[in-house]
Image (cartoon, rainbow over all chains, first blue to last red; front, top):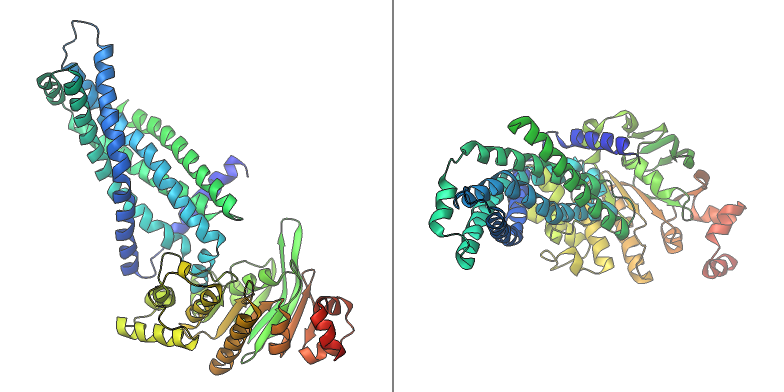
Length: 246
Length: 249
C-alpha cells in the first residue's frame, strides 16, 4: 500500500469514528476504564523517565555553562524551559507512543483477527467508534495530567542531581526556576500534548483496526503503530513550534 | 426467508463468489457445504453485511439489505445472531457480560431483567455456573455454547453459524448441532450453517447448498445427495472412508 493510499485510508478511518454513540452510558464507562489503563498504567515509566531526564539536563547544563559571565542560576532556567517546552511533552509522549500505542494496536489487532470486531459489527455497533473513541477521549483527558506530573518530577530530578553531585546549590537552582517564568509555555506544552495524544491513539488504532492475518501481523501492526506515531509526533512537534512560537 | 439473488464477490482479480442465487427457509437449518476456499465464509459475510457484494442483492423477508447503509441495516442486524468459527467472544468481558452485551447496548431492559435473560440463554445452551468466568477459562465447546447464547440473547429471527463444529471433538460437535437444530425449531428462526462436517450433513441435511469454486453447484436434501451423480458433490461428500461405508449401506 502506498503512503498516499495509507494516508487516505487514515482520513476515512477518522471519519468513521465520529458517529452518534449507540449508548452514551456504556461509552462513558469505557472512557473511565481507559483513563485508568492509559493514565495509571503509564505513571511508573513516566516517573522514571522524567526524574532521570531532569537529572541529566541539569548536569549537562552545568557542564556546558563554562562562561563565568553566565550566572549559575541559568541552569535552573535551562532545565525548567527544556522540560516544559520540549522534554516532558515530546519525549514523554514518545515514550507513551511505545507503551500505549503498541498496546492499543495489538489489542485492536487481536480483536480483528479473532473476529471480535466482526461480532461487534454484526450486533449493529459502529465498531471503530466503540473501540477507539473512548481511548481517544481518555488519552486527550489524561495525558496533559501525566505530562504535568512529568514536568514536576523532571524539575525535581534536576534539583536532586544538583544537590547530590554538588554541581549547583539549591538556592541557585530554585532562583533559576522562578526567573522570568512564562506561563504560556505550559499552555503550549498542553496544546502539544493533546495533539500528540490524538496522534498516538488514532494512528495506533488505525493500524490495529486494519490488521489482516494472524499473530505475526498483529506484531507487525504494533511495530508500525509505534514507528508512525513517533514520526508524526516529531513532524507535528516541528509544525506546532513553527506555528505557535516562531 | 432470506433470498439471495446473483451475488458475486471478488478480491482483487480473484472471484470468490460467482453469481450465487439461493433461498434460506425459516424453521429449518439451511446448510452451506463445500471444500476449503469454496466461498462459504465469504457468502455468509456478504449475507450479514460484513462484506459488500460486487453485484446482486440480499433480501431479508422482502427488505433489500444490499441497498441499505450502515444505519438502515441496524434494525435488521439486531434480528441477526451469528456464531463465529472461533467463537469471537470478547476477551475482556466475563461470560455474562458477553451474553448481555447486545441487551445492554440496544435495549432499555433493567439490570435484573438482563440478568434473567442471560441466565435463561446460558441455561438454554446447558451452561451453568460459568457467568463470572472469562473466555480464556473455557473449553472450545463451552466457548461455542457461550457464542450461541450471545447470538440468541436478542431473540434473533436469523441465525448464522460459521463452521460451529470446527476444532471440536465428534461428541461435542453433535451436542452443538443438536442445540442449533433445537433452537431453530423452537424459535422458528432462519438458520444458515456453514460446515464441512459430514455428521452435520447427515443429521441436519434438510436443505443443503453445495458451493464449488465460488458457484452454487448443487442444492437438495441429504437423501438426494445419496442419489446424486454430481461428480464434484460426490467427490466432496464421499471423500472420507466413513461416508463411503455409509453410502454402501
